[in-house]
Amino acid sequence: MFNIERKGSENRVLSYKDQNCVGCGICSEVCPTDSLRLGPTVPIARGLIEMDLVSVNADSCAFCGLCSSACPFGAL
Image 1 (cartoon, helix red, strand yellow):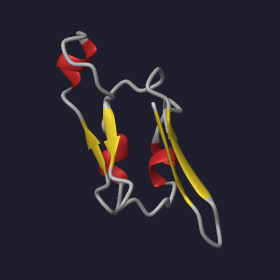
Image 2 (cartoon, one colour; image 1 turned 120 degrees about the vertical axis):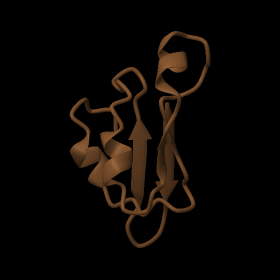
Image 3 (cartoon, one colour; image 1 turned 120 degrees about the horizontal axis):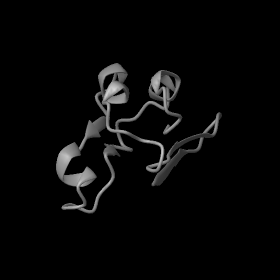
Image 4 (tube, helix red, strand yellow; image 1 turned 90 degrees about the horizontal axis):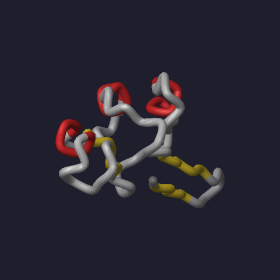
């Protein structure tokens, strides 16, 4: 689970709920800044690797909300 925040004239927050994520990759496909990366889904799902299915580059994220809108599972 992660939360990233950008402050400015409009405060925006991107929250990720790992318990809702199934690793489908829709969020990374729709991201216009290529800020979201899908991790190795099978090893993560099997518990071989302890990490989130999705990671975000907070420096390049535009906080546009496309990933959140596209996620059918409410993970973002």
